[in-house]
Amino acid sequence: MDPKLMWMIVVVVAAIVVAGLWFVMEKRRRLRLRQRFGSEYDRAVHDAGSERRAEAALDARTRRVARLQIRPLDEAASLRFADAWRVLQIRFVDEPSAAIAEADRLVGEVMTERGYPLGDFDQRAADISVDHPRVVANYRAARDIARRQGRGEATTEDLRQAIIHYRALFEDLLGHDDVRTHRPAAQKERDLVGGRR
Image (cartoon, rainbow, N blue to C red; front, top):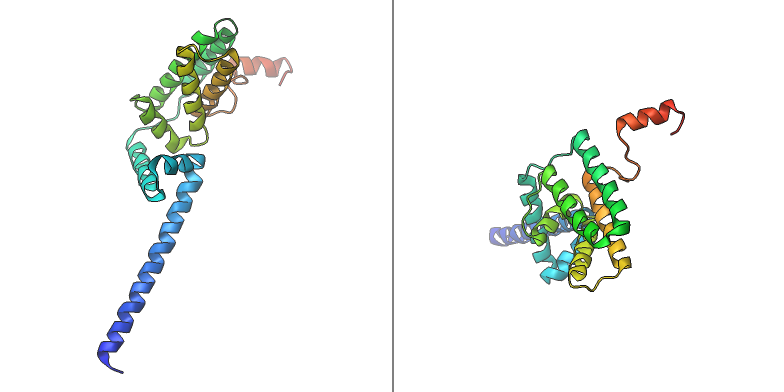
């Protein structure tokens, strides 16, 4: 066989193998991003106009958040924030508009305590989407309702929905499922001693 022809065949086969490996790696990367970001992936594709640009943006978000020093809340801070949330929910009954503003402020405080920088809203939502993709849509929905409320366009039911959205993010940031059942350790001990669980 002619050596030139043999080299051409080797080059073509190598190019096919490299292209195949690249295709498989890209497919895996895309799948990992879809799994990690869930519906946020679809939103990013819609906003960017293409999967490639959306994936680049999601990768950039991930790298940005990896450089931040995100940390869990210590127990004292978690209890303090959970108590503040319970007070906020009680306040909602009498002052729903004020409670919405307080919910936004409280979520911001938790984010700061955890190590997320408080830039503009879009940057905060992008940062949150890396570690909390399941609830970032709630954050956006709550913020949208708060803006409508600021223009006098939100109903009381809208405000109730905003509190629910804020609570979903708040609970995820605190790291427990339901702030309504998160009780201080002393209260848990009293409940156990008294026979209540």
